[in-house]
Length: 255
Image (cartoon, rainbow, N blue to C red; front, top):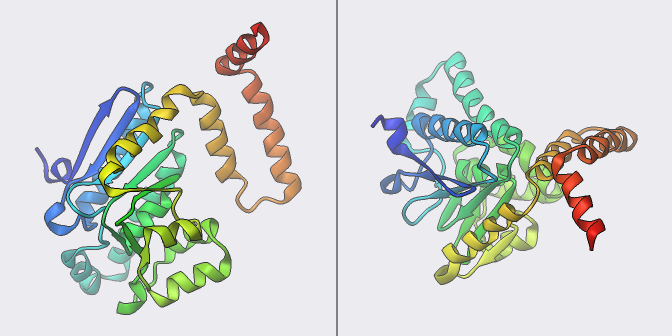
């Protein structure tokens, strides 16, 4: 087993692909192997037609605590070109999460800080245990969560994004829910069961309709209102021609 494979565990349970960050001794801190492993796992899920939802979680007590010490040391000693290559690897991961046609759901226990908070924010949906903690503390070491900023700005208001990124404060799961960073908060003792029930819902819904919805939702970023409506009209036509829609209409008409 390679270090990349051991850093990220991948399995498929029915229609659910599970990607688990497997560096619990390092609080699942991000490094090259972890980022590469997540990307490879997402591609595997993308090519598996049986998969309808991807669940991303962390082994141990924490989801992901950000970059680890060795990654920070690498940044400090790297050249401009090396840092650019490193940054692009993370950028590619964030893009891939949006490009994968099925929902990518982050299940967050414990800490999701810095790059780990960015990773959760990049997912389509975020489910948090009541004990989970979120935050973007990069400014405390003079760093800028520059790519995460593009994601966060699309999740919350401009003023709130500014506050979260420039004050570096820690948020409870409840506060993150109130701010719109989290979709659902579940009690710790029932978290795994609640998460399983939540993602299982996607097994019952149209895979093609969800894929078209996800693509359109992110595609309209930056479009004018008219352009967004035009894109919606195109997708509306495509959706009508899918097998899922044809079967759904036929079933509805039989009632």
